[in-house]
Image (cartoon, rainbow, N blue to C red; front, side, top):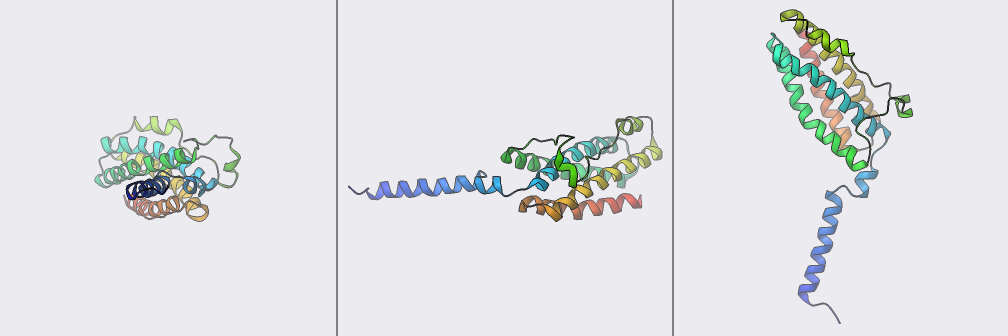
Length: 183
């Protein structure tokens, strides 16, 4: 017995929906189309964003130079968009949000660069132009570390969306670095 027109349309609709859901929900293709560089870029990038945000928050509250404050606000806005996307890809791939410090994957990518805790606590003792200079130096250090990670991704990443993100980040971060260097 052949299905009637309503049953055929229902089966066709179910098949189309299944195909759409597989593509939209990150089926096998999305989960497989990444490499170790993509994972390290996302893990290291999230750590660098968290570190940079600590500095940028202080800058937004305390900087006297409007350009330094503007760059910090711009960075925080970008990070609010980038970080959830980066966490989402790691989650889809079943990867941890942070890289293990002793992970062998660091071998070709360098260590997780980070500022020291005393760098952050030292900002609390500063004010005015002295604070601006120290905070700008910390932002530049954070952005330098981020650029290393971003360049690694742009050169060796396999996941197209993460490579595109790295390329966009390269342009915006270089602009922000140049602006901070002029302060």
